[in-house]
Structures are given as structure tokens and as C-alpha cells.
Length: 231
Image 1 (cartoon, rainbow, N blue to C red):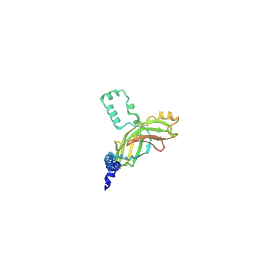
Image 2: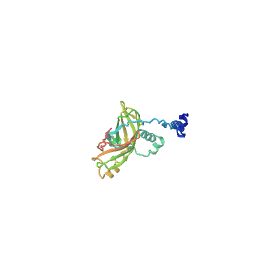
Image 3: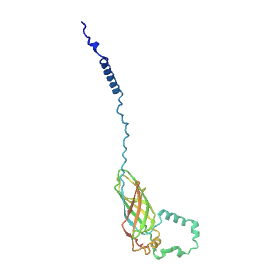
Image 4: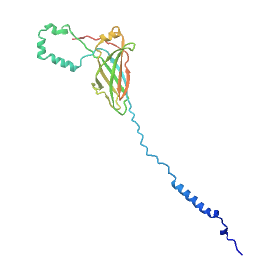
């Protein structure tokens, strides 16, 4: 009597099942091993935050509209030149009464300097360089009557005005003054069409402070008459 051996009754497909299972497991393992990893983000450079420079406020505090007087150094140079021997010989033919000039009448020719005072406030933690780009004289209707040169900047301290390099120091308020070249009132009157005594003028200035450009204006002011100085 023969007994059927179960192993003998297994067909080819039955014997191949374990092989398929092993192949699938191996393929799955390979896929897991070959799976690309997440890309690593490159290191980011630190963000540079620009320095915030607090720029001061600038205003024209006051103006004085008179004349334009020679600077003391130029006056001294001219006086020294006149006192040289050759200059005295050249003046030898001048009559004594002419040499005395106006002093014989008890007065000397006055000269009052036109000026502009500015105030600088609110300077931050950094210093700023101030520069006057252009200064203009405006008429009653805001018409431009002339371009004015400004020179000899000085800064106020407890002892008076001293020469100034136009640098505003950190956390410092400044009161400064400039001389203005209001020296051709005849031309101004021609542009104005009338006398310069009576109308109200104002000064307008373009400035650069710490790389920032601003336009500032004075309040209205008249041309002031000269006063005679008795001797």
C-alpha cells in the first residue's frame, strides 16, 4: 500500500512561492537602502542689518541783511601793502586834505556784515558733516533774486563764536553762524524792480548733513539800513 507523500504532490508553483517571497524582501531592502536622503540646506549667511544714523534737524534761526565786509585778514593784508615804502611814494602827490578823507567830517564809513545763524538739534550717536550746497535770496513772492555765497562758519560756545569745521559731534546741539555775500544790492533791486529798503526777504538754503540733503528757509526779514558811526 503506497502512501502519498505530500511533498511529492506539491507543484512547481508551490515550490516557487518561497523564492518569490525572498526576492521581494530583498528588493524592498534594496529600495530602502537606495532611497535618497533629504538634501541638507546650505548654511545661510548672517543678515547684515544696516546701521541707522540719526540725522539732526537743521533750521535757520535768524538772518541779518546788511552788506558784505572784507574779512579781517584781507583788511590787514591791504593795510600792510599800503604802508610799504613804494606805496607811500606812489601816494606822495596826493593832497593832505584828500589823505585825511572822511575823518575830517567826523565819521567813518560803516560796514555791517550780513549773516545767517543756523541751529542743529537732535544729532544721534554718530557725527555728521554739514555742508551748505547753495544759498538763495528770495523776494516777497518767493522769486529768486540772487545766489549768495556763505563763508567763515563759526560755532557758538560760552565764550563767543569760534571757527567751526562743520562737523556735528554725537549727541550735540549746535548754534553756528555764516557770513553772507550780500554785496550787490543794485543788482538785487534791478531784479526786484524797486528799492531794496521796505520789502521783506528770506533766505533759502540747500544743505547736506550726513549724506542727507534738505532745504531750509528763514523767516522773512528786511534789509536793514546802515547806521553812521560818529568818531
